[in-house]
Length: 448
Ligand SMILES: [Zn+2]
Ligand SMILES: [Zn+2]
Image (cartoon, rainbow, N blue to C red; front, side, top):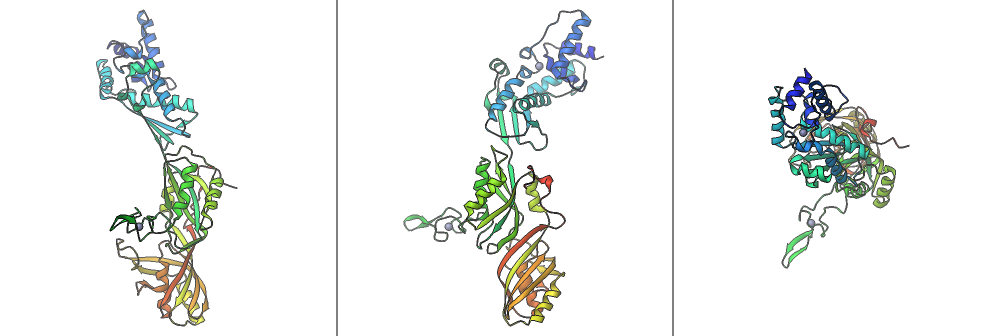
């Protein structure tokens, strides 16, 4: 009988309503543990015709007062989160080992299973969370909350907290999860890397050691960078600032060569902002601000607020690429030979051994890649413009040049003359099976 169990629990010493109710937490959904405990205490008093004696948490031997501190903890969490915008939260609690031991002893002394009902940890998480949610108008999210508050019950004195109505801020650790902005970028000029590229001579410090001590690095002119700017450096400061965050990380859906432009549809990217205090900046305003400041070298398009899953999506989603290339031939090429070579390459699968220009840390192996479509015009006997649509990972410069026979077949190989890409533009990056931009990856409404 539940009343016998309650009587046995009450016989262990002074036990507060929450601690008395917790072993029965799986009964009667909709009650708090304190309400369960109070009802059982009342029922036992009536059944035994004893005087009713309430027990406050500050005299409870099990929680040692902690069950009376939910309001105080919640107050401190709300304070710690002031100035931070969030829609979802989660609360985590570290319970001192001694209190956990008390919980086990309480059940054991009353002849119950040692872990019956709910743990104190879960009760604190829920009770504090409920109060934080009610006060801030936000919802709990156990999966991916905007903010996470971790409470260390050993970090404050519960009796003092009951007295003062707050706990020391050292006992509450508030973590703000990153926020994400998705978009596509275009790079309208060459020699702009996608991400920040520190100078390889000075390691980004901008200084070198001369005869008279430190002097500006000769290689980078003291900037610390290989190039004056990057897409990342154009985009990042505005997004970090609009979200009032601490720092930002740029994630691109692959990257083009530094000397290639990125035109037309642009390339997907996500800017991740750490510790954002604002989560809902206006993407259209942000976009206009970035484009104005970039002064034409870089443009962004289609900015939207994204979920954290979008980072993995831009990095992992299979995408085909479109290119436009200026090609120079060593010997004159006949128009019909040129067209026959393109017809042969169109729709074919090429074998590409790791190009000589690629980072030597990358494994050398032969990859098969499909050229979906290729066409072009001979503009001079030794010059052509070529447009290529190929599977992700296709090395386009090598498809043209053959890379000393490492790519087979190739335009140079079919025409039996040296061929070289003199200028390359990427004109499209599109998901192979479905677009990057599925609504499930966005937090805002589609822009009209
Ligand atoms: Zn208690
Ligand atoms: Zn340098």
